[in-house]
Length: 67
Image (cartoon, rainbow, N blue to C red):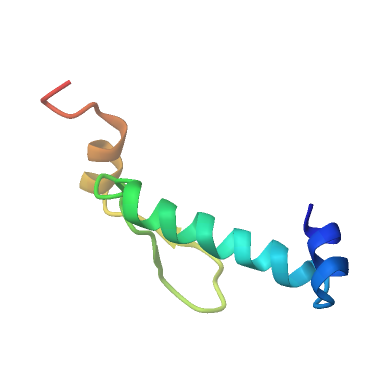
């Protein structure tokens, strides 16, 4: 469909694909609950290792008390 719109309006298919991608991303950011997902911390820029505090790992692995 993006190819057809790009041809019809003369602005290329990339515009329409990016428009749909941006719309999908905004919708997901507004509706998906990520509060239970811990954020990884990088210890050193060149080490390439990722560290989580033990409490974050265990909390993420266990179901919440409401379940």
